[in-house]
Amino acid sequence: MAVAKQEGKLKKNIITLLILIISGAMVYALPYFRSYYYDAFVECFNLTDTQMGALGSAYGSFAVIAYFLGGFCADRWPAKKLLTLSLVSTGVMGLILLLRPPYWGLFVIHALWGITSILTFWNALVKALRSIASSSEQGRVFGLFEGGRGITNMVQSALILALFGVVSNNVSTSAGLNAVIIAYSVVTILLGLLVWIFYKEGEFKREVKALVNVPELKRVLKMSTTWLHVLIIFCSYAMCCSYFYITPYTTEVFGATAVIGAAMGYFSQYARPIGCFVSGFAADKIGSSKVCAIAYVIMIIGMLGIILTPGKASLIWLLLVACAAVYASMYACQSMHFAIMEEGDYPEETTGTATAILTPLGYSVEAIAPLVAGMCLDRWAGAQGYKVFFVILTITACVGLVATLLWMAKTKDRRKEILAKK
Image 1: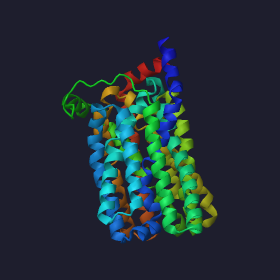
Image 2 (image 1 turned 180 degrees about the horizontal axis):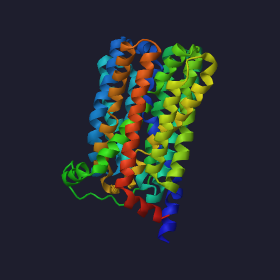
Image 3 (image 1 turned 135 degrees about the vertical axis):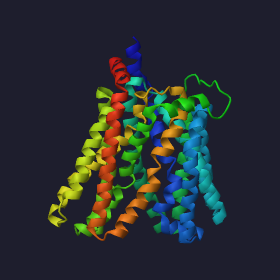
Image 4 (image 1 turned 60 degrees about the vertical axis):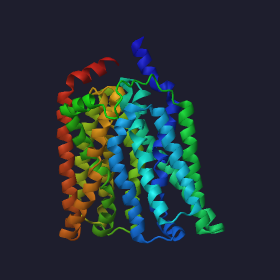
C-alpha cells in the first residue's frame, strides 16, 4: 500500500505541476523581456545602451545574493505563501511600467525583480516540486518541469511576439510594448492566485526561529556530496549558458547565413523538451544520477563532433547532429540538478538550506563562462578561438562526468534504497 501511494502522488498533483511549470517560466518573462524588445524598450523609456545594461546588472546582482538567502527563506516560510507573493508582486511591478517611470524607477523595479523572482521564488519552487512527487518520482517531476518550461517559453514567446507585432503595426510601438507588459503582468498575477488555490502544501515543519538553520547548514557543508553536487550543476550549466556561441561559429566557420545560424540556436529549444522528458522518466527507472552520467557522455561526444567537424558548408548537417546531441543532453542534465537531491539524502524540510549552497555556487558559472569565451575569441582569431572555448567546455563536461561518477559511488546505498521502493 505504501508503494501504491508513492506511485500515485504525482498523478494526484498534475494540475499543480502544470501551474508550477508555467509559473517557473512566466515569472522570468518580465525581468528579461526588455532584451527581446530592446529597441522598443529603449525608445519608449528614453534610455541609453549603458542604462539598459545597468538594468540587467541590477537584476543580476540582486539575483546572486537572492539565490543564497532564498534557500533559508524557503525553510522558514511556507512555499505556498512565498510563491504567491513572488508571482503577484512581480506582476504588479510590471504594471507600474505602464506609468513610464524614469530611469531610477526602472532600476529599482529590476533590482526588486531580483528579489521577487529569485529570493522568494526559486528555492521555494524547488521545494514545492519535491513535495508533490514521491521519492521514486523525483526524476520525472523535474524532467517534466524543465521540459515544460521549454515548451511554455516556445509558446508564450510566439504569442507575445504576434501580439506585439499586431498592436505595433496598427497603433504604435509604445502601444505594442504596453500590450506585452499587460499580458505578462496579468498572467503572472493570475498564476500567483492559481498557486494559492491549487497548491496543497503538507504540514510545514519549522523548528528553528533564526533565519539561518545553522546546524543544518553545517551538516550540508560537511557533506562531500554537496560539493560533488555543486560541480555537477556548475559543469552542465556551463554548457547551458554558452551554447549560443554555436550561432556565430556556424556563420563564421561554415559560411552559413544569419538565418541558418539563428536557427541553430533556436533548435536548442526544440531539443529541450525531448532531453528533459526522456531523462525525467528514465531517471525514475534507472536513477537520476545514472541518467546524468549518460547525458554527460552524450554531451562530450556531441562537443567533440562540433570541434572535429570540418568547416565546410556541405558538412553543416553533421554540425546539426552534434548540436542536437549537445542540446538534448545539456537540458537532460539540467533537469536532474535537483532530482538527484533525493539520492543525496537531503530532508525535504531543509531543501532550502541545501539549495542556498548549491544554487549560487553551481550557477556562478554564468558569470565566468562569458568572460572565458570573450578572452578566447580575442586571443585567437576565427575558428581557433571558438574551438579553444569549445575544448574548455568539453573538459568542463568531463569534470562533471567524473563528479557524477563519484556521486554515484558515494550514494550507492541510498540509490539502492530508492530503487527498492519501486
